[in-house]
Length: 106
Image (tube, rainbow, N blue to C red):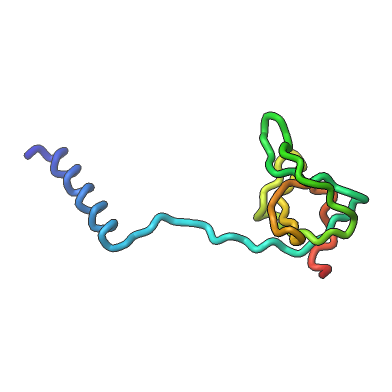
């Protein structure tokens, strides 16, 4: 057999061996949101963020002091809109980053 075919067969055999050993794809562990609060008088909370059109799917308005979660450096911020967890109804959405503060205050 030509050397190129043998190399391909060997690569397939190594891949099959790894799969049979239960090799799993790498994954990131989820990061628990740090406790924070809304520091603006009120903040719009959106279901999603689209890079072309901005936030969309308005959910509700969060009042000053509302308990939320966001971990800087781990949860994304797009054009000032931060992925945020609202601990009241237990759901994720997007809020303006400048409206998040009081980290670890509760």
